[in-house]
Image (cartoon, rainbow, N blue to C red):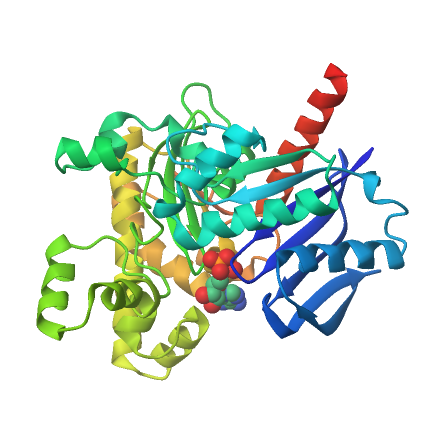
Length: 403
Ligand code: ADP
C-alpha cells in the first residue's frame, strides 16, 4: 500500500487528491484557489466533510505547504515521506511524450519549451512542480500529459494543410486534449463491447471544454481538439473549428487588437457568445426552455457540431461499436444527449431509449440504447485524477523495483 497524490496546478489554483494505492481509495481531496491573494480559499475534505478557510497564499509554494500542514495536523498522514509519489497533470506534451514521464531535467525543459503552445497551463504546471520539489524533495514526481493519448494519430490525422515550414519550424499540428479522460473512458468502454475483431469507440467528453475522440483497439486515431483547446466542437465559451477568415474578418472589421479577439474566441464565444445568456450550459438550457430563440439556436448549433463529428468518426473508424458520453454536460444532461441522438440515430441506426436515458442515475454508468441498437451508447463518469495516481504509483513501483 502507498499514498499517492494527484496534482492539478493552474495559474492561480492547486487541486489535489490523495489516494491509497493500489486500492484507488480516495483518502482526501481539496483545492487552494486565488493563489497570489491575501484572501485565498483553501478547502479540504476531512472525514467526508469539506472544511473551508480563507488564508493569505502568496504563491504555489505556500499553497503546497498549507496542504501538507493540513494533512499532518488532521493526522491524515504522520510524516510527509508517507507520500510515495505525485502525479502532475500537464496540458501540453507536444510531440515529445507518448506516455507519462518522470520529472527530471529533460522532462522539465521539454515542458518549458512547449510554453508558447499552452502559455497559461504549462507555466503553471512547472511552478507547481517546483513547489512540490521544495516540500517533498525526495518524492518522485510524474508528469501525466493531456496530449499523450493522442500521440498515436497518423500524420494525415494530425497535420494541418498549411505551409510545411510552419508545421516543422513551429511544431504547428493537432495535439488534442483531455487525453487522460479519453484513455480512461475508452479502457472502461472496451469491456462493454462483446464481439471479436476491432473495437471501435467514439468518446464524447462534454464539459465546459469538450472534445471527441475516435478510438480503435485502445488507440486514438483522431480527436477533435487541435493545436490548442480552442479547436474542434463548439464549447461553452470557445468557438471550436472555424473558417480562419472569420478571425481575419472580425479583426479587420471590429478594429480590436489581435489579443482581444483571441480572448473573445476563447472566453466569450460558443454557447455563451451565440446565446448571450451565460457560460454555464444549464442557464442556456433554461433560457431555451423559456423561449429564448438565441439560447435555442446556441444549443442547436452545439448539438449539430457534435453530431457532425460523430458522423465523421464513424467513417474514420469504419463503423462504431460504442459511443460514450462523459464530463459535466455529457454525464448530467439527458436533454443534451437527446439532442445529439436525434441528430445521429437515423443514419447510424441507433435505437435510442429516451426513458432509459432520463432515468439514468447521476454519477453512475448506464446504457441509453435498446439491445437491438447497431451502436451501443453509454454514459460513463470520467475520472482523470485516478489516472494521475495510477501512473505515479507505477513510477513508484518501478523505482522501488530498481533499488
Ligand atoms: P470543465 O472540467 O471543462 O470545467 P466539467 O466537466 O466540470 O468542465 O463540466 C462543466 C459543465 O458541465 C458546465 O457547463 C455545467 O453547466 C455542466 N453541467 C454540470 N452539471 C450539469 C447538469 N446537471 N446539467 C447540465 N449541465 C451540467
